[in-house]
Amino acid sequence: VASPATVSRVGMIYLEPSRLGWRPFFTSWLANLPLALQTSEATALLTGLFDFAIDPVVEYVRMHLAEFVATSQVHQVKQLLDLFDCMLDPWRQIMPGSTGEHADASTTSSNDDASGEEARAPPMPSKQNTKGWLVSLFVFSLAWSIGSNMANMQRKKLDGFVRTLLTGVH
Image 1 (cartoon, rainbow, N blue to C red):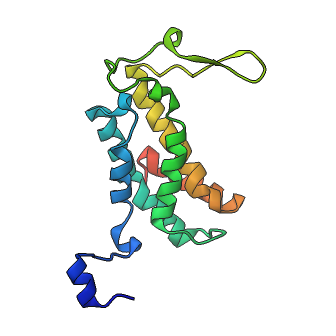
Image 2 (image 1 turned 60 degrees about the horizontal axis):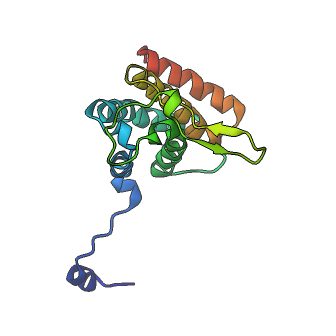
């Protein structure tokens, strides 16, 4: 265990994760989005979704629902980001140095799978469909990450709360 004098000489600052919150973790994740989503529109949309929903949903879970295993707010957001991130593959088709234009189905890469048939990456949604896709992926990820750690009856309550929150009735 380091003394306060040692810590100050080395310039370390310890912060408890609960005091730091989920936003620095989200900001770091946001900076590593696929190239096609590194636009002001996409980052503003994602930031707005997270700012709007995370705190009320996590608070509702803490106050009204029972988790199988208690998790921190940062862990819940990490689960959400991991699930959300794994569904961003269609937007990863653009490589660094490209024009950043959305690909159509005919330009997606294909690989041979174990059966010998060609497998195609799903086409990237068009720019006009990207907003809808991102909102849908966010809601799906929210439900299946934060809601994954509770019994079915608790999930139904969470579902009702999220629906109410997203419709603006809350």
